[in-house]
Amino acid sequence: MTVADRAAAGFHQVYAQPPAGRWAAPGRVNLIGEHTDYNDGFVLPFALPLRTVAAAAPQPGETWTVWSELTGETVDFGAAEVTAAGRVTGWAGYVAGIVWALREAGYPVPGARLAIASDVPLGAGLSSSAALEAAVLAALADLGGLDLPAEAQPRLAQRAENRYVGAPTGIMDQSAAIRCRAGHALFLDCRTEQVEHIPFDLAAAGLAILVIDSNAPHRHVDGEYAARRNSCEKAAALLDVPALRDVPTDNLDDALARLPDDETRRRVRHVVTENQRVYDTVDLLRARQIQQIGPLLVASHTSMRDDFAITVPEIDTAVEAALAAGALGARMTGGGFGGCVLALVEADHSDTVANAVTDAYARRGFTAPTHTTVTPAAGATRLD
Ligand code: GLA
Image (cartoon, rainbow, N blue to C red; front, side):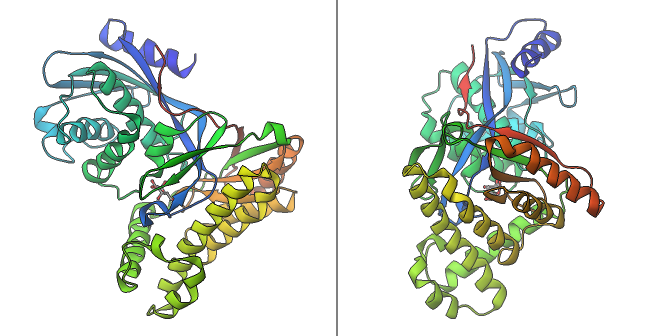
């Protein structure tokens, strides 16, 4: 059964009625621009063909009921749980967070029944939480006839995650889940939220993107993410700029000289050079030179490993093995400390690269990785 069929079947089973509609939102990979979003910088994600689907129908009063195929559990909440942040926890917290954020922004949110099914793996760094937020947001906005343009939705979903769930993430994942276009990467300015859809036609160039899930256990992800964000904000204050985005690349050495310690200098160098790599990647894609972006992906990975210190041995092994097997470029994608690696490969070479990574894992005694090739898909949409 497709994910959309599973959502509808789950809805029927739990509520003994058909849904009024189904809304889908994708997971994402980030081509380049890591830990730049909360520094007001630039990112270049694209949406995955893997999606989360919310089947939904109105329900009377200020009450919400949500079922998920993942746990088979049904969670109910009412106005009391969405007047203050954090009252609903676990996976349903993302749903309650959307209701909370909509109400905080003054929208009259309709009561609703929802059934959630998903093909986006959890904990793989492919933004399953943003996919859930975006699918639920689209469903509630449509059911309530809310005047909520797509451009305004990522900030609202991010607020749900930051304030209701309590994860201090940036705006990239929600923007990707909502605003991406099929066949394109999303060049997003995280300060202004302006976007440009950059054509990213891998097949026409004879290329593919291989996504390798490291299957590494996530280690200290939340604490380390918050720590990186803090260092960046402190560094911006020391440099007397609103955010690290405001440190120009050609002023980097001066800026670094004004910082008190080596660790802070490394964090800043990652962010500033990563923003530049996003620009350089976009320039190459605009010139239809996809195969030339490989070295930028590799430089991004090296910067994440050595300066931002967010990779783990499984991830570095996957990148090294992919490059040794002929990938044109490879890097970790997402927040770090596990998750996925993406490799740019010649289309007819992706099995060779994937097998080389699997062999390298076996030699190191790591849990076997999993892999898939992906093409850029569309953002959140109503299915029926
Ligand atoms: C996670 C966060 C994003 C972004 C990335 C790192 O995916 O949710 O906001 O900060 O990490 O680029």
